[in-house]
Length: 432
Ligand SMILES: Cc1cc2nc3c(=O)[nH]c(=O)nc-3n(C[C@H](O)[C@H](O)[C@H](O)COP(=O)(O)O)c2cc1C
Ligand code: SF4
Ligand code: SF4
Figure: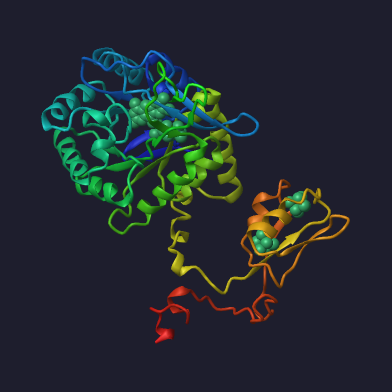
């Protein structure tokens, strides 16, 4: 079994799977059971000062499901912890004492002034916690009070608070970023400039998941009214992956540790975050949907994958980062064509409808429903692959250098060439 031991900003854990700050880490009872199930660490549900917040007393979740009713996206209007600070601190201390090998990170959110941060940090330090995570991400409820994403959307505030925290604690400081921003590199750079040890992302995405068409209330509905919530779960993973990659490959933040969060449900999801540059991952919705034991599949799956690839965890981290590039650097001499495997085709016709109506009329249908690709029309867009209900029934096959692309009539070149030098690019040298 591959060694999954992880060291994230000096915080050690037996594996890179941490529970994100949320209901699964809200109290001692949960966290103890999470550790027993195998989680490498937790980020305790966000603490604030007393008087503690109050949550709504009606439903706090909205959801989006797949056709099989599997949860794809979860929306919540929950606030930070609604339990007294003293109770949380006492429990954190007890759990850390009993599980010294697990990562115990404490999430914090207090007003955007130096004094409250200066006051709360020693209280956390006293528990023996390994690090703090600054919650600059929560997009609902707290942001209206000038905290959470209201801070995370202003890079100058991020830098300022990160600097205060570094001044007032010896614990590593992780800044948790909001995705509710146009360019994630700016808040990450600000965290870096403020001296933060790492960033974690993403927190939830501002969202309304549905509207009740009888009562005309957004859901979850509280007495006929709804407010936007924060979206998470498998549906947000692509957004999170992109943001992690953007930070990992940004020259200003290159090398800054990243804790990847957003839709991690299986070991594969985790491996993808790691490959794009995350040093570990955090999980919330998957644990809320399937229970704490989901971590066991993550541990065995990642371990088996690393063994099969003969890689260490460190080898995997950032392995895909150099392959993330800008569109203009993609190889325009890479030519593929769709191929349909007639043996696995169930003749549903989805590929035909998609290509005929919305792509390039590159699939023919015979009277007895045999579907074939017309190479002279196929632009290799890959839409048919994605709409086909049978996995691997349609594949994209690379044309070899020297072959003639029947669509363009041009010989496929072997050398890499991109848009920057393409004759159609008004800015390219070739066009001059
Ligand atoms: C009900 C709920 C409450 C949450 N509370 C917090 C919180 O207190 N602090 C925080 O930093 N993030 C909070 N989050 C966000 C999660 O930590 C995480 O960033 C987000 O859910 C994305 O991960 P996921 O897709 O694995 O759920 C909460 C999420 C949910 C669903
Ligand atoms: S790859 Fe695109 S253009 Fe080619 S057959 Fe499929 S849908 Fe049509
Ligand atoms: S979508 Fe797939 S299964 Fe359906 S007709 Fe096309 S190739 Fe066959």
